[in-house]
Amino acid sequence: MPRRPLRLRTAEADAEVRAGLDRIRAEYSVPGAFPPAVLAEAARPPAPRDGRADLRGVPFFTLDPPGSMDLDQAMHLERRGSGHRVRYAIADVAGFVRPGGALDAEARARGVTLYLPDANSPLHPRRLSEGAASLLPGRERPAVAWTIDVDDAGRITGVDVRRALVRSHDRLDYATARHDDGDARIALLGEIGERLIAAEAARGGVSLPLPEQEVVHANGGWALKLRGDLATEAWNAQISLLTGRAAARLMLDGGVGLLRTMPPAPAEAEARLRLAARALGVAWPADASYGDIVRALDPALPRHAAFLHDAAGLMRGAGYTAFDGAPPGQAAHAAVAAPYAHVTAPIRRLADRYATEVCLALAAGRPVPGWAREALPVLPEAMQRALRRAADVDHACVDLVEALLLRDHVGDVFDAVVVDVNGDRTGGRVQLVAPPVFGRCEGSDLPLGEQVRVRLEEADPARRRVRFSRTE
Image 1 (cartoon, one colour):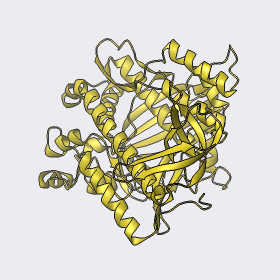
Image 2 (cartoon, rainbow, N blue to C red):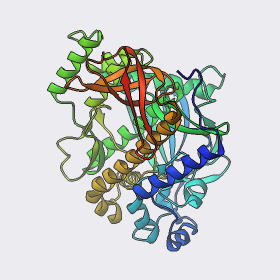
Image 3 (cartoon, rainbow, N blue to C red):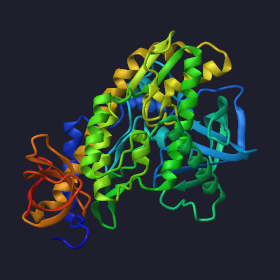
Image 4 (cartoon, rainbow, N blue to C red):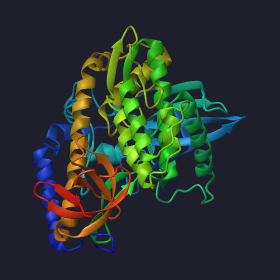
């Protein structure tokens, strides 16, 4: 069994990874270069907006993955009595995109920015997404500024949204910004983040603490790592969720908008999960909710990891819901346990530009612009299509690197955890202890949530597939 983390380091391996990524681009029709007409529009200065609030003196900062250039959000946090005030500046992409123009049409066709390990396929030309619209430090930028007050229980007590001019004063990243590094901004983010997490739990919401597989290119090679276990990421996500909840409430009160929705899990699905908990030895008291159980688990423990993978099945059916008039029958997002909207990533996600424009109009008591209102009915399908392609591309990239990492180790034996079992008990899925690879595993009566030894039977980069069998 390999004793060290596997990494693709040679020039030949690098060429194979890049060739595989190019095949994925072709297979999923990942957009390439922008047409000249789109680039020409992107080169124009933003449309003038009179009456912007001048917030250039507010010491906003950004917090993103290391190396990010497409910075949608900047925040400023402060205590107000026993509560807090959150200022969240969002890139004002609508100031750069002419409704009905070439840039607008191209963004509608793309839907989202696609991230591949070697390069991204941006929603907007880099001149905007990593330049004129991005909230880079030290640059004056047009923004949409949300001001949200929350009380000591994490409940929203006041909301304002308006166009502004901002200047981010500092750029932080998840890897280096820690609660214990002495930065008062991160300490305050942690304070607010934990209150919002507690409020989410009180509402019945839940965030699955499952790290995600990620392909990384560093130190001269390609490898896999698990990402998503940093507290700063969870706190930052809560600021975005807070803003999305405030936006949804504005739109519901105003009778028009675009929500991000997810229905509650069917009762039979939760009943099946309770059976899985019993099989795994995960205590689930009768008076405890699904969220209570999830929050108490440690994904580093094999049985807990298996339960969490099973629990992800309850979070299905997320989509976009447009409405104009009566509110939709299903207005809430089950994981958030409240109505919620996407408004915080307009550089990278198409829907946010439209939902933000609706919120600005409603907050100011103005009619919603026709270009935004008319687009609402077609956005749900366009966004689902774009997000489906993004998920497919992500999975394909991980599958490719998994197969390349393991190709020379067919026949080797690895330690693994059984995270899923087929209904007929003839096989399932396992996660290797190292490297963090998931794959099909053959073998009868695989013990769900237990650590087992598995032999690698197949690692096929062309088919992007790995397959194991259980060894006795």
